[in-house]
Image (tube, rainbow, N blue to C red; front, side, top):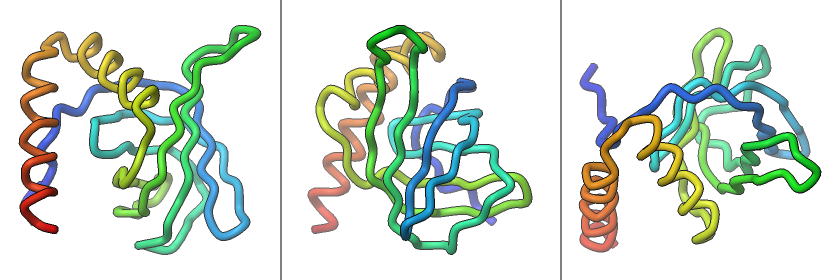
Amino acid sequence: MKDRRNFSRVEFRVSALLQAEGVAIKGEVTDVSLHGLYMETDEQIPMGSPVEITIYLSATTEPVVINVKGTVARLVPGGIGCAFDKMDIESFAHLRSIISYQGGDESKVMAEFSEYIVRKMHDE
């Protein structure tokens, strides 16, 4: 099976909360891209389920969070892969910073995102 990931994925371990169909699942994100993430958890949610994901970036008094709406795209024993469908500008900015910092190539990350936007506009 061809790997359809078109974005730089970076290893990034951080807590997250995934909510779907009245269920809240806590887990740990192990890698993330501008298009999705993989979260370690023993829980399972059906493929294609819409989810709301909250990624916690700091444990300070005013934690920084990334809020994303997505879809369950992959299920494996011990984890869930989610594709991002929608996020606010602030969450996108935090995510872009993480990927650029962890991956070390902001121009590549932005080029990937631009290509993605053009493709999305073309598909609609």
